[in-house]
Image 1 (cartoon, rainbow, N blue to C red):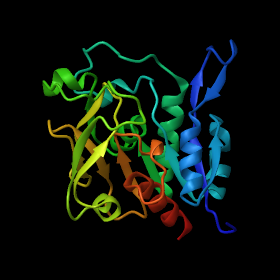
Image 2 (cartoon, helix red, strand yellow):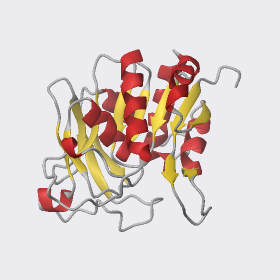
Image 3 (cartoon, rainbow, N blue to C red):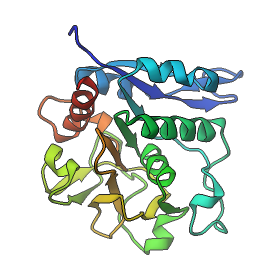
Length: 239
């Protein structure tokens, strides 16, 4: 496909791990496969802040993936709760990426932790322990494999997300201990789980700024509503 828009994907960082005892980047291949299946040309964005202006001048859209890393204290309604994740240089880099993308109105899809970053950079707040905060028994921590649906969400009508996947019930897979709990007035909550947990947000009036708490990259079959999320991002990037 000659007109594939260039879609940047940010990366996790590990000081040491099973891949290497030395610092390295890491991200699941599913994100790249999902962008490719949707008609985009995926490219990894390393944590080189000085090169961000160059990346922004070349890429047509962005995916901020999920991950397990600590976010800024100011984002939490319950900072006294124990941190579920360790500090990582990824947090500051992703914030710079999201801020730069919003400043340029670059099409952006935030997934899981990426949704939380998009939401909180734009003024939302979140909890470190959603099961305690919401007093819920819904499986948000993914008792099932990522390739299987864990629960349903309700997609709100008249939202950008509804225009992509349809309004009403949608089966999703999730794996998160933290969750967005409040959003500013200029942000739309476009999906919730049955217990009221915010599962998707969007910023109206932009080319494409959507965050989903689940992992659509695991469902790339043609016609699958989760693949359509990536196709919508690529279409926005192409335009």
